[in-house]
Image 1 (cartoon, rainbow, N blue to C red):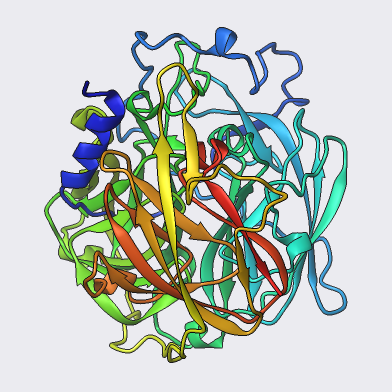
Image 2 (image 1 turned 180 degrees about the vertical axis):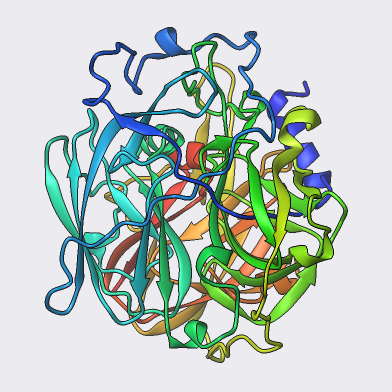
Length: 502
């Protein structure tokens, strides 16, 4: 029998590439805390499926395209810069966001912000974040892509209970990178992130700062994701529900418009979806210059017409809007299923509204990556989604469901290893995220990786039947760290394992 999952997997395996674009900012999306809106009654974000789910046959609630301005996420200010660190205070709480016209949507937030806020950090300058949990569930804050000690990694079982406060310390002893933070509480992470618990964390350093890349108002963080809404404008969460999440959000707004000047922009693209893959391109097939991936700048820029992002992956792209006349528009499209092309096939629209001077440029050499050393050992990791009649689906790594008491891989501190990660499913996509380290992709399906995967990575896509060979150096911290599929519904089903560095 051909199941919905097999149809989606087959489409992903054969889907064409696409590309992405983006442009100027607007004011942040309107968000009210639950306390400020206490005069209004709404079911909470954690409403039961019976309350919030209109059912599999109910049509999605959609918004008009290209009418709302894309907001910029708010940049957090530190509460203290004394001593040798910048300190931030963040509170996780319920709030109401104005996502769809005429509706207020219950969301889970960091400091009441939807989309989540931005923390700007500097390499070598520690950041301390005091996180307070005022939600109904325990949480775990994971800084995705960071070198951090175990206590601050935000592992799936290192929970922060409701009403409690915990201090997370981020040494930032790594080069520049476009990171993000999100909830990682096991079995809860998928719904929590879907309802809004995600933010951006940008590290810069002298190497990046010395380059004449677009900066300031021309450097735009853009978080992409999908969503499903009921007729009351509430987010509908059902596990493993990609076909019905047909509203595409960019920085928390559906199909927004972005006003840009006729000059170069740096777009920091993040796929913050639970399940959706994006294949992004400009509607006219215009050039995109990819300059970075998960772990910062590539060694050399890569000119393409398509940028592919699986959940959790990032790409830095420079788009030169001077090739378009003032008064024109260009749509950023998506060619990756599932869902109706008239909805999921469009992402946002750039409106070129004015001329502007442009002293920026993209150098032919961006950085130098350290040479790969000899590997101490090699291992194979197999990802598999398993369905059996009458049983709940399982997420497996090497044939096992996640067990926090089990160590699946023992790694010697200071050594480098080569891992071959395999998607055992022929009809289900996965990807792979390794905590603590940025790795290098050595091969994809036995061939050299493309230029988009030539830099530092912490998350890598695995379409049905694919394999990826990667190399990582474990030289920063000892302890137990997870590795898992970053399709968060899959990790919530158990597609997660644990390494111990000793």
